[in-house]
Image (cartoon, rainbow, N blue to C red; front, side, top):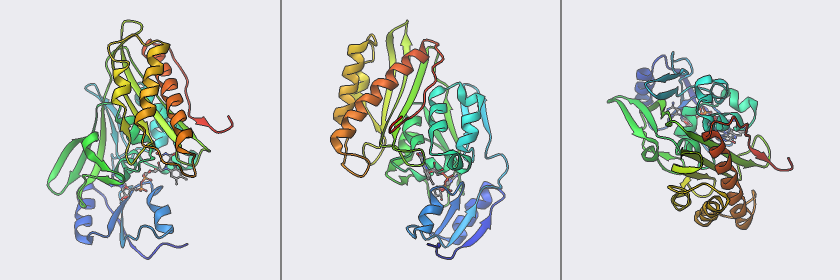
Amino acid sequence: MYAYPFSYHRAKSLAEASQLLEQLGEDSRVIAGGQSLIPLMKMRLARPTALIDINFIPGLSEIKGHNGELCCGALARHTDLEMSDQVASIPILHDCAAGIADVQVRNQGTIGGSIAEADPSGDWGTVLLTLDTTVRCAGPRGERSIALDEFIKDAYTTVLGHDELVQEIVVKKPPKNSGGAYVAFKRSAPVYATASAAVQLTLDGKDGCKDVRIVLGCVGLMAMRAKQAEAELRGRIIDAQATQRAADAAREIAELQSDMRGSAEYKRALVAALVKKAIGIAARRARGERVESSHEYVGR
Ligand SMILES: Cc1cc2nc3c(=O)[nH]c(=O)nc-3n(C[C@H](O)[C@H](O)[C@H](O)COP(=O)(O)OP(=O)(O)OC[C@H]3O[C@@H](n4cnc5c(N)ncnc54)[C@H](O)[C@@H]3O)c2cc1C
């Protein structure tokens, strides 16, 4: 199917993009990688009357480390993030970037577009919530920085005003002795996960858990922090029993629906297995081990 007709506008700066959004009205939309918006337009589920292309705004793809923070420009493609040495220093981010869909989608899709879209099945939201993440936004009233857990309000809903744009995603680098892992279960590469688990922890000594965040993806209308699961690890030794208790606690909070990706019961078992695996990898990485990790695919 073809999209409804729309006008096309190329912005040369964030200020111009914001101005165009205001001038062209509520039915205008920003386009970045187009990997969410274009399919929706072709299915006529989205009908913007005007598209404002931000791909020609200089400097918006930059990935840089600065003052203990990793700053990713809104236009940084999933592939740019996968290949970045700066990103590799926070392995959970590399796990995420390298596993999104297939190479075509990763070459076009952007981190800013993913966060602005707030798709409950998207990988970035789940992963970035395990870290101290701030979204820098630009609009007619200037810039503002919003913590990610306040930025995403609901499925496909953020606090962004119509004339505001995501400029940068800022992640505070985790302290020493930290490690993280993101494991998603996918039926095939170019589909969203059936369920996913992101774990970021800091060790106290070799096995003690000083701090931890566990976030589950595709288990409800938004990525979900598994606080009871975290409590099973925080201040305790990370052994097989504690890991199992955390996995069981995560399984209990997931708000799962049966759908084409699997039954609720199947997904519940999956969530527990993914959390267990992610805790194991995160702890090994926190001890300084180099552990390769990738998503799980059906039949592999
Ligand atoms: C076949 C396929 C499989 C996929 N599988 C996965 C997957 O497994 N995991 C996953 O996480 N994602 C997946 N995606 C989505 C992909 O990651 C997209 O890149 C992402 O959702 C949106 O990024 P984009 O740059 O393409 O945004 P666009 O499609 O250009 O825009 C998406 C929305 O965000 C808005 N927007 C974009 N940039 C900005 C900005 N800087 N400021 C304000 N608003 C903005 C747009 O107006 C639009 O409403 C898949 C996509 C496809 C086509």
